[in-house]
Picture 1 (tube, one colour):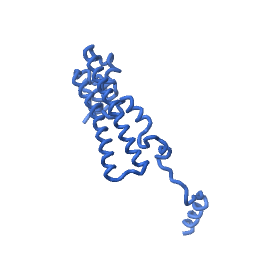
Picture 2 (cartoon, one colour):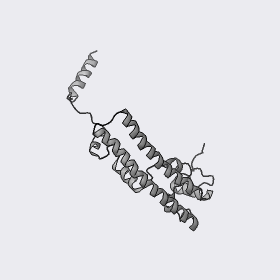
Picture 3 (cartoon, helix red, strand yellow):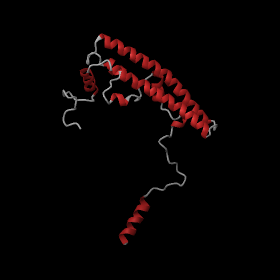
Picture 4 (cartoon, helix red, strand yellow):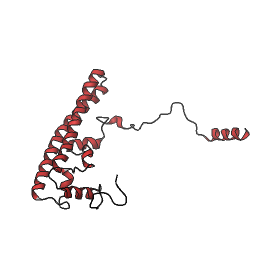
Length: 184
């Protein structure tokens, strides 16, 4: 018993004093000054540029190459002139649609932000505003995923495999599996 009491006393004496009103910092600290508090500046910048922002990750990681990355790798895949022209058109259409939808999404998120900031929110308004923002986010995601589907339809299987190797999703094996193990 004596060791336990001594250990407890040593811990208490060695522990720093903690004020009862010390703040517990949130990982959100510092974000309260953002114009749209829930959106990171890089995300906003990406929306304005029509960037992918991970919206097409399902496609990308399941063997549906994206038009922007295909064009970056066109000489290594390689793409023929007709494929390149078609993929440029797909990329440009996707980017244009994404910028327009991104602007609409930013406006919807700003309206939701304003409703909370101005304390002008109730359950009905919350439902309307979140459904509006999420519908735009879904359209944006579909635009990116659709561009991957369109681009993939223009490619030969060996070009898709080459893309996957170049992007680091597949090894150089003929069967498309990464080396050093077996696939399930």
